Length: 123
Image (cartoon, rainbow, N blue to C red):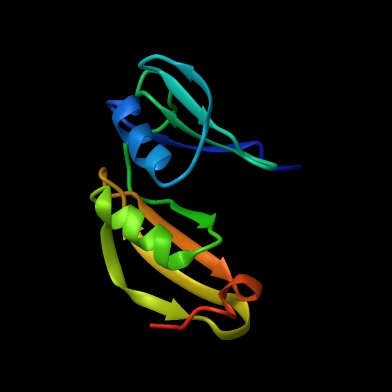
């Protein structure tokens, strides 16, 4: 078994997709008003309309995105209206993380792995 994709449900998929595009994701495919799929390495991240989804719009998943520069990603997320949850957390050998709620209150985590975080100060 392998993970194929993860998706969020949104009444206005394009609106939520703009938030994730502003954070640096690239759209691979879009079926206007129904489904937006972003480019991913092994699994796809998508946003579906209620008509295309088997779930209601909810807040029970955590999306984790690896970033090269956590400070830049934090600034970008805040500029796009994300609500930061707490402070940047140093996880030692694992790296550093920041937690947010996107415009529809889905929880996202941005992580900069330790090999990329070594040159940047922790907060």
